[in-house]
Length: 347
Image 1 (cartoon, rainbow, N blue to C red):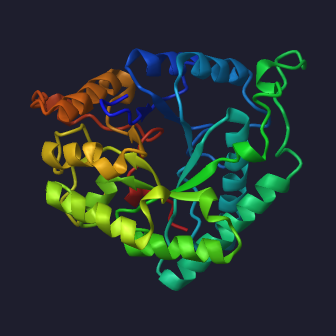
Image 2: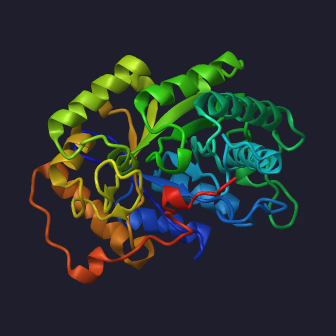
C-alpha cells in the first residue's frame, strides 16, 4: 500500500499455481492482484472452476490482498460487426462475470474493442448491447449463483454463508481505454463517457460499470501525461465528463510508443516515453486516492514485478529512479500478460 493508503497491485500469472500467485503478490508488497481466469488467447473456457480456487480465495483473504481483478480474454471485441465474433465475445464476457463472482473478484476488466471502420455510433450501440446482454445472462444464468465444490464434491470455505456469491458481490465491469489504433473505441474521455451513457440507456445500473485508464494507452491516444499539469487537466476533464467515482482502476504502465502514435507498447515504470514526473503525479494525485493501481509492465515473471513496484514506491517518495540496463529495456511483456492493443482481433 502506498503512503496515503491507496492500493497498488500487479497482474500476475497463475501458471505456477493460484496460491503461489497470491503468495508472490504478498512477497513483492502488492495489496491487490489482477489475473486471467482462463487462457486469454483461446475461445474455449474451462468446464468447471479450478480445483485450487477455494485455497486461492482463502490465501488472498489471509494475506489481506484485495481487490482482485479479472482481466477478460484479449480475443473479445464488444464493438465489432462480425456476428459470430460478436456472439463469442458476449459469451466470454458473460462467462467472466459469472467467474468473477466465484473468485470473489471486485473487478472484471475488459478492452472495449474496435468498430472495424463501421463508425463510432455503430460501435456505441454494439458495446451497449454486449454489456447489457452479458449482465442479464450472467446474473440470471443457471450457474450464476453456484457455490464452489471442493475436489471431493463436498462444501468448502468458499461455499460458506460468508463467501457464497450473492447480489451484493456482483463484480464491477471496468472498461479500459484504448490507444486508438485500428478503430479502437474509448480512446478519448468523451468517447468513454458516451459509451457509459449508451450502456445506461440499455438499463444497466451505472454503479455496475466503471473505467480503467491505462497510462500507456492514454499516451498512445495523445494525452501528454508526461507533464504533471497535463495529468491534472486529464483528471479534471474525466471528472467533468464522467465523474471520478467511476474511475475504478489505473494500469500504471510506462510506454515505448511515441505520443499520439495510437500504438501500445508497455515499458518499465519511469523508463519510457512518459517518464517519472508524469507517472509520479498520476500515482499521487489527491483526487485519485480511491483508485486501485495495477502494473502490467514487462518481465513480470522474471522478477520485474518486484522491481517495478519498488520503482513506484520510489516515485511516491520523490526519489530518483535507478537506470535500467539496455537488455532490461528490451524486455517484452508475454502475450499472455500484456498484449499490444494493435494486435487485437481483426473482426
